[in-house]
Image (cartoon, rainbow, N blue to C red; front, side, top):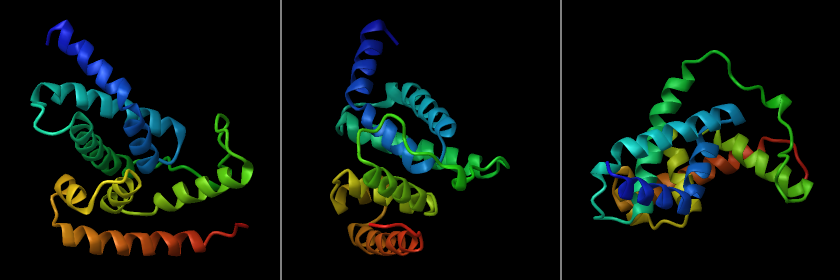
Length: 168
């Protein structure tokens, strides 16, 4: 790949880096694993960049590669024995939110960790504002199936969050 393509890739990656952070946060529960997944996604994006033909938006293609990489990585990660202990979770150090919002965000991400990979993808795409049609296209399921699965996943997520003892 020539330097022009490499520079274009890096510029596009920088422009859409939020996707990487969000996917890593949705699929991994501790900082080191998130950083590892982040790097794995970048590596997969680079490996498959020559296959990006521009038929869809770069961000759409990036979503697909990132989610697929996260699902694959997540499956590998589940076989590891050194799981994260949530009782030792700390408040984020660089967030500018107040403690109440930080706690709510941590509870949300802790709850999301209990979802399966497809449910995580549904919540991610929902949070990103993708339509049911676009979400279905990303996941290879029908628009109607997205609606049903998303509603069930949101209900499941609410149920999980309600099991946490916190003051809203």
